[in-house]
Length: 390
Image (cartoon, rainbow, N blue to C red; front, top):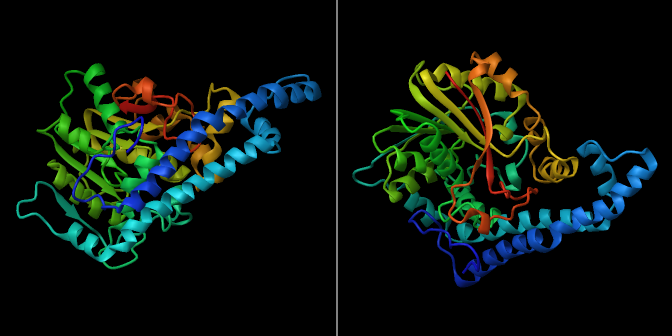
């Protein structure tokens, strides 16, 4: 059992593990925690004691960009060790989560495909939907096959692997249901917009629905829709939501262009989706949000913090994913001019907002690492949100 965080919540869709399989997964989680607590900090120590003074002596100034920090730090043995071990922990994580799924894949897929007699929500797939290139070019987050690959017919294995892996990836800090991002936005909405009661909500790039479910729980009278391009994720998401007792309508669609009517939603959200796309796709998605929202509706996207105003060393560490975790759009997505993005999509830029909001996960300060680093979703205990009112 985890020593510091709650165990991942059980539900019928979550693949069962043997004793040894669970022990292997828990080793990966504890290994990641060890890197955060006992290795990560050494990078700053090396930078302050050696790298920064050497740079100042050569250039008569401190490093001003993450690029300058990186060029110096990549030669340091401590950082080389840290980066190598962090990447290794990713590969170990996926492997440990694949093993119990592959062992019993046929039975697990059959269980996922079994529909309840009285389903609360729905699942609509589109076999003709083209998976965008930014989704197929690399295995996102190093997950073998990415989110979209079907290894057998009617496959949901990508979702099975992902659900458990997210818990390990975040070291339990996303909560027992991996729902911290959605729950954090819900908490922010309730505090900042207490009279806002959306009737129709859309979650873009929902994956397995970790962040979708909190909206269904917070707004039980609302009609909740969630879309993704990956059928394996959606199959799993639907089964998971049904077992958790919430009504969500999942459909296989591209967030750049959906089949929903103009002005048909009061709230459109996404959770760490934008950095998985591309510059063109990002523009299309925000423009689509504008089309889908009714007057007075809200668009809210959650991400990790932008690099603007960040200490160059912290930006360098946060940028680890760009080069080491199959996140080719990570860096550029953290440098987007959000005001211009809103304006180009048709929003009033004066109604744009961007801020850091607290994690909704209980006793967040005690359980978060309080460090922004590669491989840790939002270790600072905060989420960055960007959005606009229409």
